Image 1: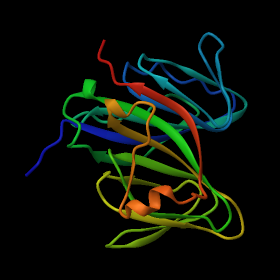
Image 2 (image 1 turned 180 degrees about the horizontal axis):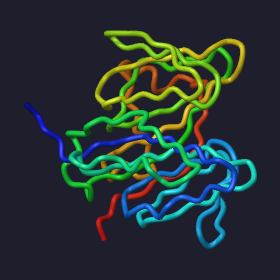
Image 3 (image 1 turned 45 degrees about the vertical axis):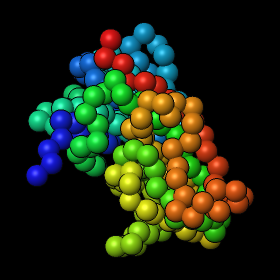
Length: 221
């Protein structure tokens, strides 16, 4: 049986207006503001549809609208996620998966980006070169593999191990978009992680569009 030292998690933190979180410990995290207005101690603001890589601990304060934070973390497989950020904040573990391919963090990078499909867009069969967790923000996506096909709606999240071939079809009545965080070999910094099952698909026009937020090496220093 293969064991894993690390897990990749997605936690959603919903802040009531003016709620203030406790200071979370140091960790490898991607923080993404889905809605609302959130500010770090010191005044730096995390706006909706912004993401930040955090290696050190932090505390967040919500404004008059409250806010929803999507918090990706890579951590020790034996450690539990922190789901008690303080009064007025509801935290929920959405997805947690072992990442057995990740043995030495310094050999990997963490990437956060978004994928936007136009109405009726599609992704041809492909794999990625590392594991990751995706979370839907808009629209609907039908994701298929050799073993299953499943629909995802706003707020739904899923894990992909990286080596499994998948393909996707977006809904036809609005644009579809999801946010994803991937763990990738460090030599892919600034490079695409995708591999197509049919090499001829590499040269074909693609309907999806990408937005990059974070592409950082997992340095232990």
